[in-house]
Amino acid sequence: DTGVSQDPRHKITKRGQNVTFRCDPISEHNRLYWYRQTLGQGPEFLTYFQNEAQLEKSRLLSDRFSAERPKGSFSTLEIQRTEQGDSAMYLCASRSGLTYEQYFGPGTRLTVT
Amino acid sequence: ELKVEQNPLFLSMQEGKNYTIYCNYSTTSDRLYWYRQDPGKSLESLFVLLSNGAVKQEGRLMASLDTKARLSTLHITAAVHDLSATYFCAVDMTSGNTPLVFGKGTRLSVIA
Image (tube, rainbow over all chains, first blue to last red; front, top):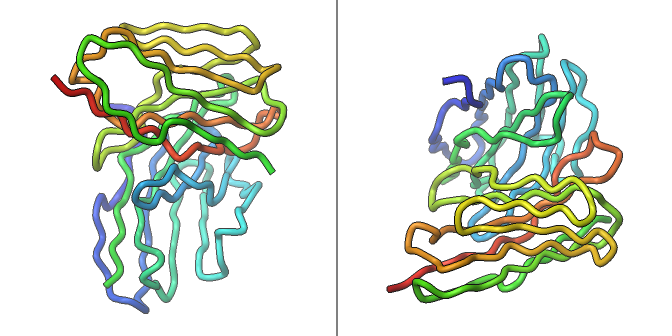
């Protein structure tokens, strides 16, 4: 399967702990996006990469959040000192430079207790 | 700031009936997307509408885009239970390198 993959699929952590999520986009997709979705809401944009460059960050992305895409392939999203309000589904999407359609991964569901 | 509004937010419809979901957005864009999401799952792309007047159909779903009215519709024909899901519309800015802005979604329930 060559779709977008994310790991882990579920993460339960205690408040104050750090967590890191990984996203592997579709091969040769140079654009990668992170979104966050809370219950009953649409996904909200967090950050965007074109190749290894982080081109845009939402104001939702507080200083506790950091994202990387070191070689322009997979990406990681780290949340430091997690808070209960961080509990959400974290979605990764990718697209090529030739089309506009974004393909979403299965998501990582984070629960902060 | 780009805003996307969908209505209705909740829709319960009988099998075999027709209905339309509306998506309005606040600023100029030529690109609109419809996604489906099943409970606990990720988003599945349904339609990508790239120009004014675009119409696309897949099975019992048909989507259209009117960029002058900043309106897209998702029409459901002769609904079946398998269409029960949450449907999201999303818009991105015309410049092309911007993220998607989503509506709140329409939770559709098709009942017998």
